[in-house]
Image (cartoon, rainbow, N blue to C red; front, side, top):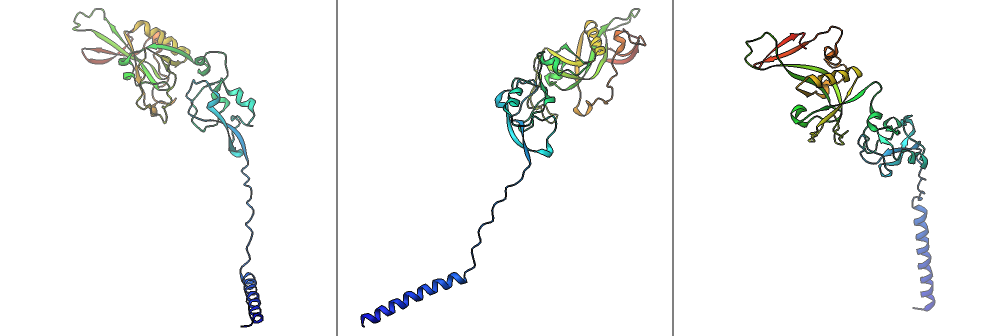
Length: 280
């Protein structure tokens, strides 16, 4: 075959290949550029939150808090916002008035900025903190924990004059305080795992329980400690601890000379209980 003919065939083949490529590009669907990603408008603001569980009475440290984005329409006026370093520094060194859980926004209402003692800072207005001696057998086996509610029961031995037929000791038992809150057991103020109304498996067997009382209740329990053989704390159910629970506010005012000057108590003799009025 002549060289010229080979050259012509080569040029024809190359032209055909080029034509085929052009035709393929013309018939193929055009490539569309990816749509630009729209920046989501989250409408958030920096809020100071707890990075871990913080129990009541704990001093806040730098590792306990951090700034997080928070939707603006869910921000309370109590939250610490802005992301400013000064705001974070102002929180460090304060004391938690109530427990914080990991991820919960830090609020001013749950912080104590006070030079006074912690107990006086967490006491509600008009209340008093009064310590009562306890033991495992007078405090529900040690299962009473801070923030539980209890009834205070007084037991004392009496000798009724003119009764020569007494065959054994006689005791008077009376519920002197109803539905009062336990602030602390010894120096244990709060348990970090006490969530959802459950105290878990923890027990605190202390020698004193600090109760949240009114001034009148403080007088009652002070007198009761002087005249009783022992005081028992009766643990109340969580569902029976509301301010409107039965018995709340019905305290033994007769111990401090109430308006009627007498009261009804339970007299126990030989294991038999009966109601007695006017026994002091």
